[in-house]
Structure formats: structure tokens, C-alpha cells
Length: 80
Image (spheres, rainbow, N blue to C red):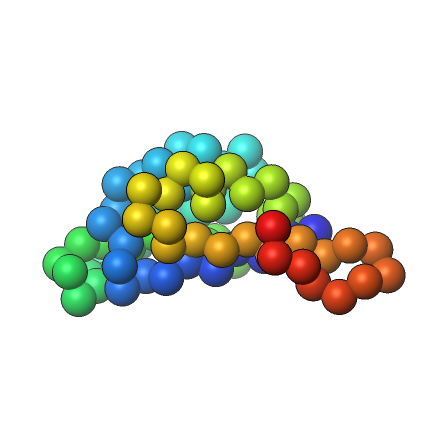
């Protein structure tokens, strides 16, 4: 199981993370504008789907604004 952390204030809304997420957990929040004047990416609160910690979203982010954490069985959370 994984956890996605997006630093919204620097996000330019490029959608690379949205398009790369195999679980479709990331979306562009058109109701919010960040300090740069863009609609930032957010993580869906969907109890039916869970992040698998693949880190594809973090890998494609051109501004390195996404962190993905993975939880190993029987261990504390680890940075992916």
C-alpha cells in the first residue's frame, strides 16, 4: 500500500501525474488555484482504490513535487 503526497503550491497542473497513475487516483482540482495561478493536482479520497506505491507519478513530475511512500508488511513506511 502506498501514499501520495503532492506539494500543491508549486504544481503547474501539467497532468503528467494524472495520466501516469494506473489506479486513476490523481486529478486536477479545477476549484482551487495555487499561488502560481494554476489548478494543482490532488489525490482522490477513494476508499475503493488504494495507491500501490508504484511511484510513476513522482517519476514523471517535471518539478519534483510528488513524494510516494510505501508501506512494507510488518515495517514502518518507507520513502519510495
